[in-house]
Length: 243
Image (cartoon, rainbow, N blue to C red; front, side):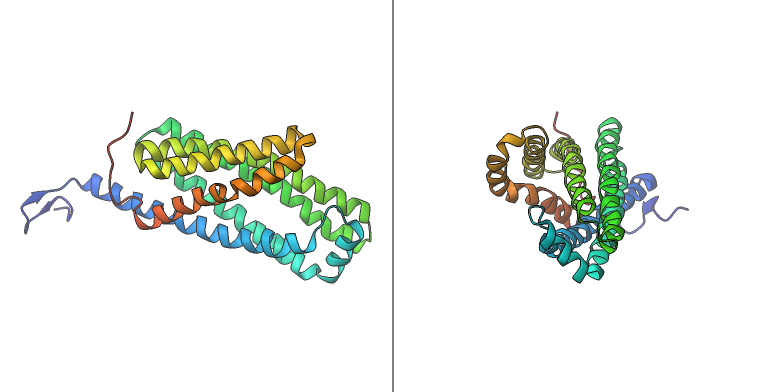
């Protein structure tokens, strides 16, 4: 007899497929949550601690001096970007499997958009890889061109990422938790607004910068709360879908 088919102590019949699916969903939730936390740490180091310290697009010579003196740190930044790409793919896989039984179409679109974003990010990171050889060759103009390309490509990718978060908010609102869905919606709309303005309304760059400072908290909070929800609650309870 299958060990999940019944409980002789409680006298309750069990569905083995339902039990296994619940266990798989819990494991998937942990993959999503842990990957998001690892990604957040990697991003904090790669962009927050290294990139923002070494790079100033408005100061070409200073940027070149920083890169020459800290090339090992630059390589470390690239390594952390690779970690981010890998964890993004894990999250994409996890989101598809986590929500597919509730809504296959929505889960596929949500995960697919994150995969597209991750591929765009990989193209952006390839510009950073090319920076290393240009720094060693002393080509300041090319270095600054590559750094500008990185910013623009990644910013375009974050438009896609914003749409992904909006779809994820729909799935979370309907099948997980309403407040979680609202936080993800706020984050998605913020990413979409900021990076659409950066890409298509450069004349308003000062306003966009101020707006980004205001929206920084909801942009960060959405995925962080989602990560914690997946680790603490994900896959443990099944909530009735909201139409």
